[in-house]
Image 1 (spheres, helix red, strand yellow):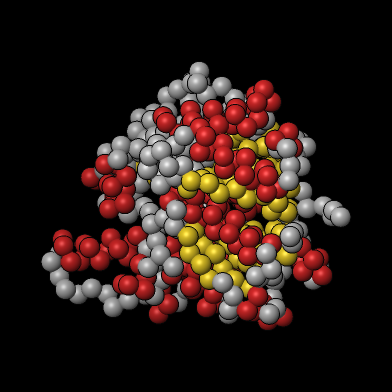
Image 2: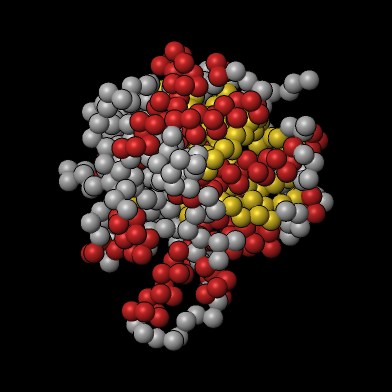
Length: 413
C-alpha cells in the first residue's frame, strides 16, 4: 500500500487567511466568534458566529462571481493556496491521475436562501438563471477541477460535520490504492445565512451569547457550555503519493498515515462512546500504531452538552489510563464550528501543530465539567512539545465518524 504525503496546506478561516496567520491567532488564544452584523442579528436568538474576512470581489471578476456561491469562492481561494504551498504545477502532471475531493454539509446555502427569499418572501418569479449551478453541493469541487484541469476523480462528500474529514480520508485512499497520484482534498462551508442560522436555532444546539463577551460564547468541555457556534471558511490539503512528492522535491509537511471511518447507528443526532471509539480505533489500525503513539488530539469538541461528555469517555476507552496525559484541545472554542469544513480545518491545524511542536489551547474553559476531566490544554497554548503523531476527530449528525492521523514525514522502509 502506497504512502501519502501532505505537501500543501491552505485555509480561509475566521482567524486568518493563511495557515501562519490562523495558527498565530490560535496560539495567542484569540477568538474569531463575534456578534453578527445586521440584518442577520435582528431576528436571531443567538446572534453570534465566526465569519471570515473575505471579499470575493478581491479574487474574482464580477462576470465570474455571478456563477460562484460564497462556498465556492472560499473553496477556490483556499485550494489555490494549498497548491501554491505545495509548489505544484499541474502542467507537468498526468492530469488523469490528479483529482479533487471536497466535503460540505450545506453546499450553496447563500444561493438557496436568496432563491427562497425571491420566490416566497418577495413572491417574484425572477430567479437567477444560474441558481442551480451556484447552489449545488458539488459546485466547489467542480470549479476546482475545471480551474486546474484535473481529470481524475472529482467527488463531493456530504456527511454533515465529518464531510471534509471523509473527503481527505477518501482522497488518501485513492492514492494508497493506486487510483491517483495527486489529490486536492478539503472542505468549504458558508452557512452564515438567516435560513441556516434560524434552522440551527430551532434545534436548540447553538450557544447562548455570552452577555459579557460574545467572543467567549463557545466553551467546549466547560461546565458552563451551552452549545456550538457556527462558522464559515475553507481548508484544503494537497496529498501526493510519497515517491511522487520526493521525486519532484516537494515540501512534505507530514504523512497522512491513518484514516478511520465508522457509522454510529444508535440515533441520528446522539453520539455513542463506542461509535466514536470505533472510528479512533480504525484510524490507529490504519496507521499501524498503538494508542501510545498519539501525542496530541484535536477533538471534535463542539461545546454541546452531549458530545463533549461522550467524546471524553471515548478518548478514555481508547487511551486507558494514559488518556489523562494526552493533550486534547478543541480549537472550535476560537474558530467556531464550520460544519462540513470543520474536519479539514482541524486537520490542517493538527498538521501545523505537528510541524511547530505547539499544541493550541481550548479557550474559555474556566468552569470545568467533572465529567470532562482530561488535559484540554485550557486557556494557554503549550509550546515546545515533542509531537510525532497527531489525531483529528470529526463526528457527525447521521452517525458518520471520521478520524485522521498524521505523522512526522520521515522516511521509512
